[in-house]
Image (tube, rainbow, N blue to C red):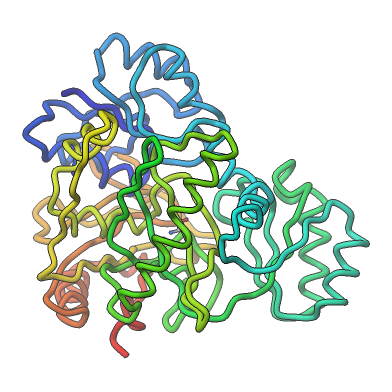
Length: 417
Ligand code: GLY
């Protein structure tokens, strides 16, 4: 098979590499991809993810068997609808289904309609009403831009004053149309984990759970980022909690969507909090997580190309995992990220690394990789325990000259307790 992956980050690097490892696959193209991916034999296609007709032309000319859409923006913009109209097979939700991530209000209404456990909320488009609600409820609260905001649309203010200021900024157009409406939500206490599933025609195939580290500094302190590391599985989340999440959240969500006229295909990502009353949803995404994907696909022993082909062909598939190991990934970011940071910093040559490396914000200058974004690359390793996996990864990172970069030294810490 010849396959196309759309996107350009570490998540798409991991998806492409895993697909290319399949004996069923001769070529994996990634559009637009990034130069780090070519170290793994992935072929880069210079077409932007928003250029649906350019991508469709490419898929037709190259006789691509099917396409995997990585990021949320093209999904929310209807790339799946466009590919399907052109008669092309694609793994991802259509525009209507992708609203589950594209509109927080849509997701909340769906959950209320189908009794899926989540926090109380209200939606506002007027500042005065939003402020009155904050004053009435009191802190802690979570503020969310209704639409896509490149992972920056969730704010957890520490004080009422901060909340009111943030609401003014959001409703004042900080994220354009995406923050014209704001969801104000109850703050749910508990440990967060990510449960993803592949979905097609009402069937769901849950993946192993993972845990992301969103704050920039050790001990989950500092600003929110796109993710500083992840690991899977997550031993402190009990099997019963996961089973409840599958039965009371994933299945009723897909069944509820179907009952409402939405036939979901692709990845459903549930961001969950393990509470004393069971799991509760804090967000749904219409795609795989980044950096969860990079550890999940290292942990997966199944052939991903075979799994997705089987799912799209309505066959029963079984997904298998390396149960003898924990996989743990540490993100190496630009110093200063997520605030201002420099680009163009030379990267160490990682082609001989014994640990898996997935690139996100990189560019190529004179044949060498340089940084081109906040999150630059993730290194993923394994061990029989979380501390063994940490040792493997941190020993490898310590041997590199990363003075110009920053990485957290405690990925996996909650699993050690
Ligand atoms: N790791 C969080 C996300 O992908 O949304």
